[in-house]
Length: 170
Image (cartoon, rainbow, N blue to C red; front, side, top):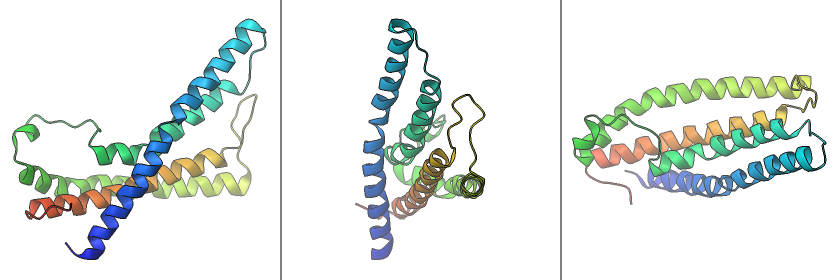
């Protein structure tokens, strides 16, 4: 692989590692929101309108920003009926071909995310709830997470291609 490709793979993986590790702490934010809501409801008899939606937004940010890092670690679910028995080079060759399906899906998802985010910003879209928060911030985060997954999928293609050729990227 060329130096530019190796640099791309290492840069994308470094960014996704940093974003993914930072996103791991969002689970604590979500737990704090839900704990605060629970205490508010039971101890003070004051239910919070915003708590459940904010927890949902935090959870969406958690799994979308952490998705690329999870993909990098190989933590996604995979059907390995035959896969586990194959050699690393054969797995990499099959992955290098099948990743195009993932890249195609992520490109479509990104196009939809960009369109939806533009709509939310342009028209000031709000959620249909009593709290009615603006949706643009979470849509921006979601689109960014999809973009990171697309970058990681391309990096994985190059990594798998190098492995299939017998020259893995260190």
